[in-house]
Image 1 (cartoon, rainbow, N blue to C red):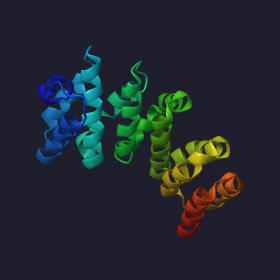
Image 2: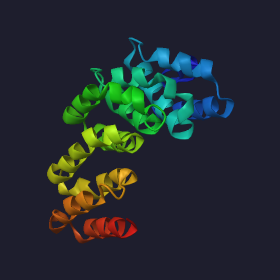
Image 3: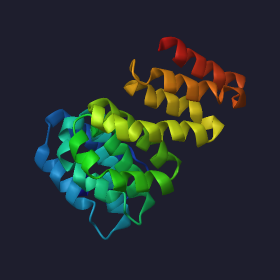
Image 4: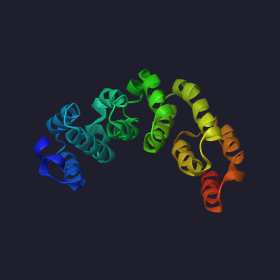
Length: 204
């Protein structure tokens, strides 16, 4: 499978990696996925970067195909290659509903990546946290206050998207706190941003 990666084909675009992900999903090729996971350890930066792209593209389409590698993706959050870091968090955002217990057991590492991560890492970590909240009341009790704190302190322009990501774990127990957190900051938003938040609140 490694020979089909963009860097191995001398390509500078992502099309071969996406095509490979689609092929792995269409055939539910577990052995091929394992080979791509092993490629994350490649000393060739291009190969490792291509591999994480293939994996999260596959995860978006068939999360069950990569869910068994949850621990590998959490470990990837500590990589010195930022492409691996945000790619791993993207993969985790797709498999979190299937691997909640594994991810919760390694929550400190996910939080550390969230705290120092790039914009894409942070965006996807919010989805991971929301899925964990939805999985178990115990997880909700620990993680939801952190999401509220995030809404209190994140940049105004991030509020609509992050609120939409968090919304999937909102229920009758936490709805009031969520609404309060958003209403407290709605005055900082542009008309378009506040419209998006109001639309979300109306749905709730």
